[in-house]
Picture 1 (cartoon, rainbow, N blue to C red):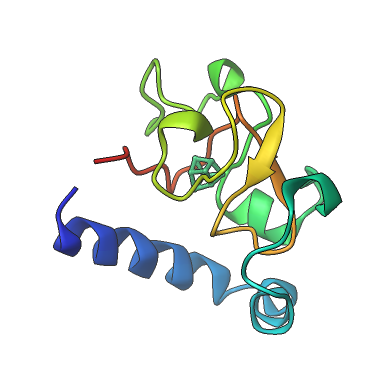
Picture 2 (cartoon, rainbow, N blue to C red):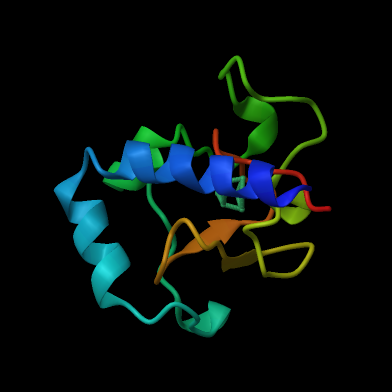
Length: 109
Ligand code: SF4
């Protein structure tokens, strides 16, 4: 993963998140790193989840950008374990499913 791709991926996220005031408030008000066990799960109703087409089960994604085999565990924004839930930098203060996916998926270098 080049720095340029990383920057581009973050830019894409920020562009989407900018459309949701609630997401912007969450980004600004929560600690960046929290223990995964303490984090509430991202829900379908979450505005950022909707904006990023997040799904709890990557294999169920109908998004054109989804590539088979991609999920949160091989995304550079995920810092959890291989199963269960863990933190994602794009959902501060929440946990995503290890087997989830969203349009900002960026393969780990
Ligand atoms: Fe976060 Fe990556 Fe999972 Fe999207 S695919 S929710 S950016 S860890």
